[in-house]
Amino acid sequence: MPHMELPFRIREDLKRVVDRGHAFGLGVAGGVTRPPAWGWSRLTQPLNDAHPASLTWTVVVSHELLRPLLMEFFRLLPAEVTGILELGSRDAFRAVDVFLSRQAIHVDRFRGAWDLFEPILLEDASLAVGVNGDGPFIEIFLDQDKRLMVHGEPATASHVEAVLRRFSLAERSESEILMPDTMLDATQTRSVLQERPGVIMDNDQLLLELRAAWDLDLDDDPERNLDAAGRDIGRTLWQGVVLIDQEDVAGRREAHGHFWGVAGSRRDMEQLAIDYIEAQGEWEVLDVISLDRSAFDNRPPQLDNLKPSLPNAGVLAWRVEPLGTVPDWDSEEDEWDGNDRF
Image 1 (cartoon, rainbow, N blue to C red):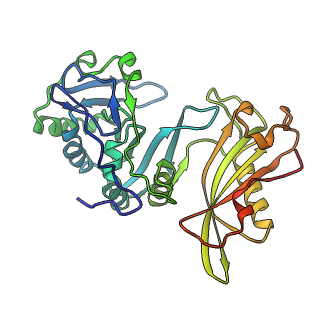
Image 2 (cartoon, helix red, strand yellow; image 1 turned 90 degrees about the horizontal axis):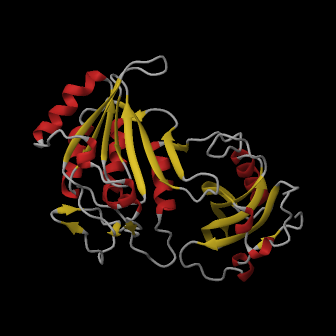
Image 3 (cartoon, helix red, strand yellow; image 1 turned 60 degrees about the horizontal axis):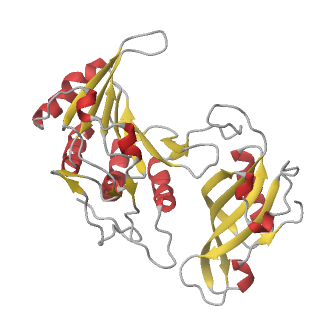
């Protein structure tokens, strides 16, 4: 199995939680008990006006069986697939961020990134990951609780259940294999990634890598500012991080640019931030690492005078954080640079 390269490393100080023979991912710190039973259940959705007939299999097994099962299910994928990544959102108006491939990618491209980052994808309790493809449609999805879901057309049933039989897993009712939501809510989680000074080693960096590998994009409307209920909420406060670089006499250097701003959509905020940063003539924006809406009461101290009505769109404050050890950087680049428009 391929090994992850730096900066990603799984922490070596974590002890796996095991309850009566059921092993959990390393991202689980406690507050859990073994599921009532191992096995699988099947839910049938009949044909209706909105959707074709479909089947969903939910599979619950101990951690050591997840990878072998996934490898077998991946054999059922077509040549062109769509990657899926879900993780908890820092956005004030959305609980979960869902990322999908903009267009179908070759299955080998999906598998290349999966194989590289597999230890994180299987162990991290804060993210869910999956893949789907057509001909016939099949989706393989591993949720945050590391339950495996397979969704597909009836034509996939014989292939999916053949895999389950090879693992000697019994068909059961959902109530026999699924933990109550109240017990799942009590799960204690922890980071599985090793920390290194001067290097971001969190899900933002992982997302950056998978976005490039699977051509992922956030599954929302970038032109409108919608809340979880689909209502347009107009102009809001945003906070973001961009990857920036510059050329100087000492050579190329990179940094993260952290900014706060006001805009009426994600697309507008991205463009306002890029224009603001590049207009200063010092930095070029390479990528937007993260961009989330913030509740007004969570604004930083330097925006204490901001009016709740958010009258002006634009970048309100930003600062530069160098990557790695970079000598002789001007000290003011680590300070917030305010914008008097607010």
